[in-house]
Structure formats: C-alpha cells, structure tokens
Image 1 (tube, rainbow, N blue to C red):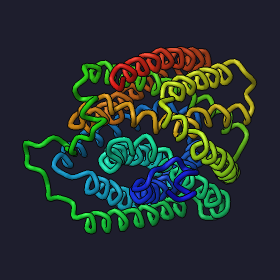
Image 2: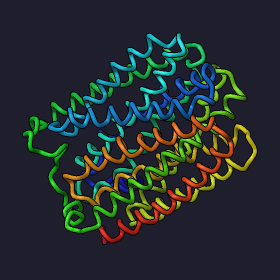
Image 3: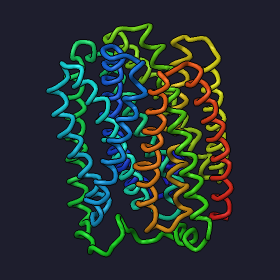
Length: 413
C-alpha cells in the first residue's frame, strides 16, 4: 500500500475507480458551479430575489418532468452509458442557452433548466459510483471521489471571479458547455475500454447491477422500506428549507451587489469555501465513514443546518450571514452529507437503488419545491413566512435524519 493510499484511507485496488470517478465528477462540478454562479448573479441582478419562489417552483416542475422522462429513456442502459447521455444532453442545452441570455426570458430559462441538468447528473452519478465501488470500497472511496468534486468547485471560483465579469452569462455558459464536452469524451472512452455490456432486455430494472456482499446483506433485511420512507421525508423537508434559505440569502445579496460584482464575489466564495471543504473531506470524512461514523455525519450536519436557518431568520441581514447559511446548505452538505446519502441506499436491494434515487432526487424534492414555491409566491414571499418555513423544515429534517440513522444501523448491523 502506498503512502497516498494510507493518507486517503484507501485499500489496494481502490485507487483506479476512485480516480476515474473523481475526474468525472470534478469536471461536472466545475461546469455546474460556473453555471450556478453565472445564472444566480444574472437572475438576482436582472429579475430580483422577489421572483425566486415562483422561479424555484417552475424549476421544480421542469426537474421532475426531466427526471421521470429520462428514467424512462435510460431504463435499459448501463450506468456509464446513462451518465454519458446526461453529459451530452448538458453540453447541448448549455450551448443553446448561451445564445439566448440577452433577454430576461433567457436568464429565467437558464436559471430553471441548468438545475434540472445538475439533478440528472446527481441521480445517475450515484448509481454509477455504487456500481463501480462494490462491497466495502464505497465507504472508503466515496469521500475521495467527492473530494474531487470539491476540487472542481474550487477551480470554478477563479473562472467566475476572473473571466466572469467580462465574459458575462453567455461566456460562462459556453465555458460550462466545453467542460461537459470533456466529461462526455471521458465517459465515452471509459465505456469503450470497460467493454460495457449491451442494452438490457426490456424486462430488466433500470441500471441493474450485480449485488455486492454489502448490498446482499442489506437486501435481506426488512429495513429497506423504512430507509426509503425516511429519506423521502427528509428530502421533502430539505427542499422546503432550501426555498426559504435561497430566497432570504438571495435578497441580501441582491441588496449589496450588481451582477458583475456578485459574479466576482461568488467566485471568491466558491474558491475559499470549497478549498476548506476539500481539506475536510479528504482529512476527516473518509476516516469517520470507514469507522462506521455515518450517523455522526448525518445528524451532525442536520444540526448545523438548523443553526443556519435560525441565524438567517433571526440574525442580522449581512452578506456574511447570507453566504454562511448558503455554505452550510450547499457546500457543507455536499461535503458531509452527499457521501452519507449515497451510502444510505445500501440499506436497499441493488435493483431498487436506481428507482429509489429517481423517486427521491427526481420526484420528491422537485415536487416539494413546486408546492412550496407556489405557496410562497402566493403569499408574496413574506419575511415571516420564509423564516417560519425555514426553521420548521430544519426541525423536520433533523427528525428524519434520526430515523435514517436508526434504519441504517438496523440494516447494516
């Protein structure tokens, strides 16, 4: 075992799939963070934070429609081929959006559609990662893989802060499209070299994989249904809380910055916060997970999220508060909870995992955002309603996280 393997908590044989998956998710994260920073700055400056609840509801409707439709189309594809389809779709859509950003309608469309593309990638990358990291590899290698995601986000910061103010929304969307092109080439080469099997027969479940020893044990345990219910409930609360947090923090940022200034500030923010999260993921998260500390990370993050919602609702309306709350909800969630969220699905049989991920990420979360966004829009985005929703959702998420930990202990024990 090399020093690098020891430092990262990997065993011999873990390195190659972790590196390949890490490079892929790093490219995807670079494209997604550049897109997110660009469309967020343009939306707040040209349309305004008051329009966020309705825009988030529309975005949720697009996300659920896209996720369900894509799941139907990809039902017979192996994970690497499905991920290639997502990358090619992202390349085409980002290129098209770059040509329509002068009008407010184009900015609105970019804000709505870009998130749907990112959600598709999250759904299918998780399936791809679990199919490549079988057995005990997942707990060891997933933190390293997602550390590469943080590295891609770190690199997105200088792109936003450096060329963003001059290139504008159209230029940044083209940069994201080119990055997705590289991801497509990587996936295409991977699929050819791995000798991926042909399309499944129509009767096969989506992204069916051979069961690993860990998955087989989980499949025989009755906690799979309890885990799925706990994940769905937690995802609903997370989606509702995100509506409040995004709208409240967006209003603060809108009041302080112009579009170009906000692009530059977000560039610095993405670099700093993702560099810190990279160190945390490489140095801490993997070791905690490998020692069975999944419940600690899962519940610990939910308490941080509750604190962030309370501070945003009751604290001063400063940029530091807005970016700090966003850091907990987004970057810290990706660092601490995304590897955990993937491992929670091991409580289910392998053939159920893809559809469960689609149900949670592609249906439950967008539908919750749709309902919550429509309700907030009808209420006019009132500050009291936003604060109450954010804190209540954080409390509900903490309770759901406790239930997830309980189901995971039973399934894995």
